[in-house]
Length: 149
Image (cartoon, rainbow, N blue to C red):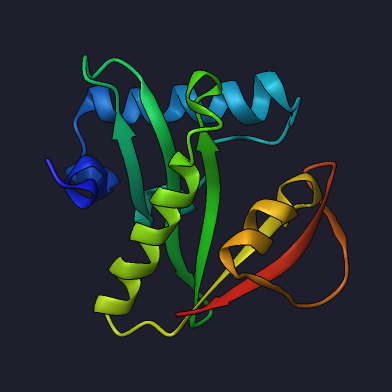
């Protein structure tokens, strides 16, 4: 299996129930349980977004997830999470490199994200640049970042 094949790129209506469950569980574990965010984790963007994910070999847990969606003519990256037991293996970087490749192949030239301040160094290392000032979202400090594809 190639690296690209190890990640799936699907809209929610293309996903199995198990895939939706695994993605939701990782996002809830990361953003609600671990980071104590009290905003709803699943939202209307999930209905139209392209979900990028990799499940473990048993297909019982998501190792890494993110979502892509177009908003006001801009492609947005969000809900980037790596399972606690998979962190430190560069899985998040691999996933985003594949996201960049996927978008380039579709003629997209720039992607944006609301990066949590604690995750800014991760995006810095990938070549993302800051646009604007720090703002609060879901009770955490964020900054808008972009990447030229």
